[in-house]
Amino acid sequence: MTDRIEMNGIDHYAVHVRDLAQSAEWYERILEFHVLHRWTTTWMVGRGNIKVGLFQRPGASPVGDPEQLLVISHIAFSIDGDKFDAAHRALVAAGVAVDGPDDSGIAYSIFFKDPDGHELELTTYHAATAQNPG
Image 1 (tube, helix red, strand yellow):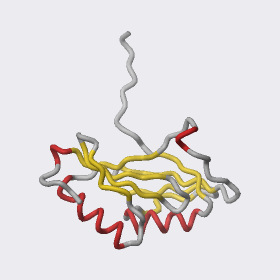
Image 2 (cartoon, rainbow, N blue to C red):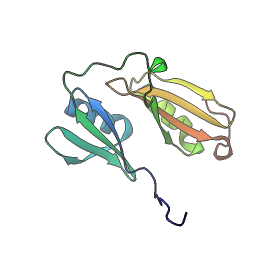
Image 3 (tube, one colour):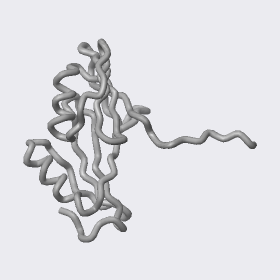
Image 4 (tube, one colour):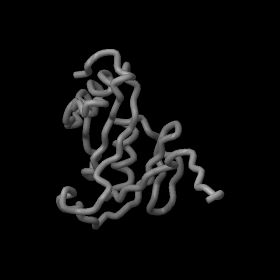
């Protein structure tokens, strides 16, 4: 096969949210994202090369138990090891409920949720971490 699918990375991921303004404000306050573009029922937020499409669905219901459904269960953001502890402290200081840090054997991760319950992760690989976070 001579033709290939050459990709540069993930452009964005999309999530359904109940309230565009509330979600955009949360992503800005917690993750320092900014509104990059506004359409009628969709806003693109992000920073640097990370973007999230927020799709307004005011009457939407949360997904049932994600462990029992075929869904994308979470999105993980990579973070440098020397910034991991500060990010953890910033989330806690902002009143965000955080699980972890967890050690998978190759990386440390912390998990948290956005206003609509979408699970997010910050992860750093052991080689990038000077000390055990936590």
